[in-house]
Image (cartoon, rainbow, N blue to C red):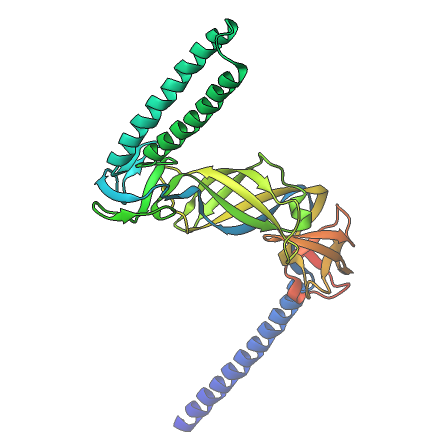
Length: 351
């Protein structure tokens, strides 16, 4: 009896195993069938070309320079007796910077001034006497020559005396000074360097095609590496009339040094030019391309099938590329799911 029970249990277990295997086989068949149904049409997303009026951006780097950077040279000689301004001081044009001894020149000036005044008085007196024929024409001419010489001496010594006062020839900040009290200076010696950083400029280079789209007075956006997130507005003040050895044209851009974003000569800045493109252009999402830019292809959806098309492309603008030909404006272009496509395969457009 015990053997009969064991046999029955064994038969039941075998039957259960066989049933389970059959059920699994049917489930696999059903999954395969569903898979075929699911993959019968490849899901894709599509896009279309956009017709846009574009601005072409060109960036050019330059070194910031001061609009005024002058050296003051000595026009006199002698001992420096007083220093009024030194390195780091701000000055205005005409302000007194230093004084050179002038005692001898002051005495000489008084003498030539007196002589000049005497000849002026003599001229007036001789003109009256000449009318009365009390003096000769020759005597009158001698007085005029004497007055001319006296005036020249007067102006010469006056200028020499003025040169003993060293004055700023421009407004700005003293970048360097080369004198001190008690030092002896001579003619032509460098005394001060004055830099005006209230107005700055950069020179950048553009190609022949680019420079033709720039005019004096154009407003240009500038960016500095020390303030990368800030925009400074400048204006084109000069454009080279001929190219350099590299066939580039210089463009000068001047701008006010912003007090809240102070810049210094020697820093780098980037000028951003925006040029209008000729007419409108068709642009396509770059992700729609398959293959390389040299041999570009895309899939479009015709009815419920994918069609492979060769196209010709132009410039790239960020994540979009210019399409020159090969597509119609209404073509539905696949931009996701291309990896599973081939020419003529069924597709299903999904949102």
